[in-house]
Amino acid sequence: MTTKPSSWARGAALRGLVALPLVAGLATAGWLLADRSPEPAPAPLPVARDVASGPSVLEVSAPVKAQEPGQGASGQGGKSPLQQWAEQLAGPLDIPANALIGYANGELALRKEDPSCHLSWVTLAGVGSAASDHGRGGGNPLGLSAAQAKKYGDDAATAAGRALCAGGTDLGAGTGWWKAIAAYHPGSDSELFRQRVLGMAQLYATLSLDPASASSPRVKATRFALGQLGLPYVWGGNGPDAGAAGFDCSGLTKASYDSAGVALPRTADSQFRALPPVPASEEPRLGDLVFYGSPATRIHHVGLYLGNGLMINAPTEGQAIQIHTYHSKGDDYAGAGRPA
Figure (cartoon, rainbow, N blue to C red):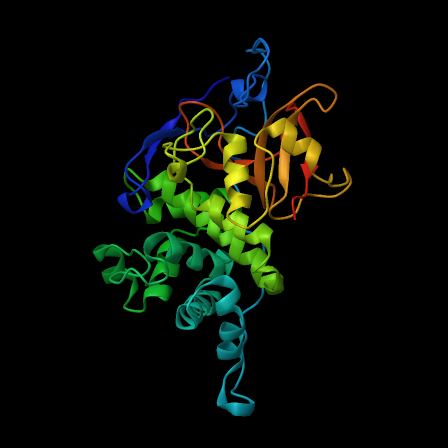
C-alpha cells in the first residue's frame, strides 16, 4: 500500500524554498531495490512493486531519555546545580547556558503541573533550535504564536511546555509527541519543523549523556547532515556548495564526513566496503552509516544513523532529505559501518 505523501517546505534561511514530499506510513519505495549510485551502473534492477519496504518510512518516535537537569540549593561558589548543569552542557550542545536553564525550568514546571505529560527539556531545546537557533535569531525564541503566549503565560519555555502538553498529551510516547509538535507549529512548513525538532532533540539527548563526544567527527558529521533536512534528493548531487540543489544518498554521507575532516569514497557500495563493520549484534551508534542491498553483489543505498532507530536519509527523486526509521521488517538492510 502506498500512502499519499504530504508536502513540506524548507525556509528561506535554509537555502531557499523547496516543496518536496515527506513519506509517512508504510510505502513501497523503489530506492530500496533500484540502483541510486552516481557512478556508471549496469542495467537497473527491477523494482518489485509488490514488496512492502522498510526504512523509507518514519515510524512515530519520541526522543530518548536525556541527562536530568540539576536540582537543589546553591552549593560551593554560589551556583545552583541547575546552573552548573547548564554550564557543563552549553558548549557540547552548542546551546547558550541561559537557554538551557530555561528549557530545564520548563521541564521542571511541567513535572509539577502535568506529570503525565513527560515533557523533556530536549523537546523544548529541539523547538528552540528549529524556531530561532535558541534565541540567536532574536524575537520569539520558541516560536510561540500570540494566542499561545496569551493563553499559556509569559515565560516562554513554560508556556511552550503547556502548549505541547495541552489536552492530556503524553510526550513520552511517539504518537503523542509527533501530534503535539504538529499542533504547536501548524502551517506549510509543519513537517519540516517537526523533523528538525526531532533530529535536534535526539542529538541533544545523546550528547547530554556523552558530552565528551561533541567534538568528534561523528557528531560533526551528524550536525552537518541535520542541517541539510529539506533539501531535495538529486541523483549524483554533492550539495549546494558543489553547485547542486541537494544530495543523493552517498553524496550526503560523504559531504557530512568531509565537513568533519574524514574522507569517504563517493558511492554507497564503495563506502560499505571501505568502512569497518559494526557487529550485527550491536545497534549502530550516532554517526554510523547504515547500508541497504546485498553485500555479496551491490550496496545501493546508505543513510547516516541518528540514534533511537532513526537515520538521516536522502531517499530518492521527488523527495527531500528527511529522517526515517532505519530498519523495518522486509527491507534489505545490509549492516552498518563506522567511519570514525
